[in-house]
Amino acid sequence: MQNILTIAFYVALIGVLVILALGLINLVRKDERQASRSNQLMRLRVLAQAIAVGLLVVLGFVSGAISLPF
Image (cartoon, rainbow, N blue to C red):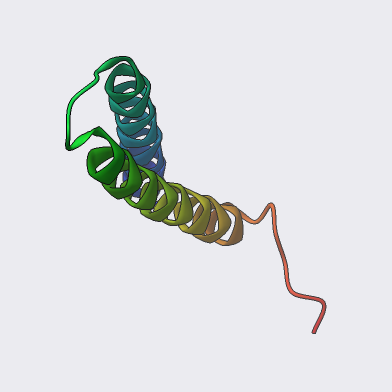
């Protein structure tokens, strides 16, 4: 289980990196849809980051690095 979560976490991080790179490339482009595309990529990046953080928290619980005080 821990190995699957670790792989999923790294895949999510790579996804965030790819989306971030696409957003930076989009900043260089100058066309009529640039602003709309930038907004969509920003939303997608925030979603991918939330997934990565969620996976990291679950991985912390599974590995025992995070424990609840009760």
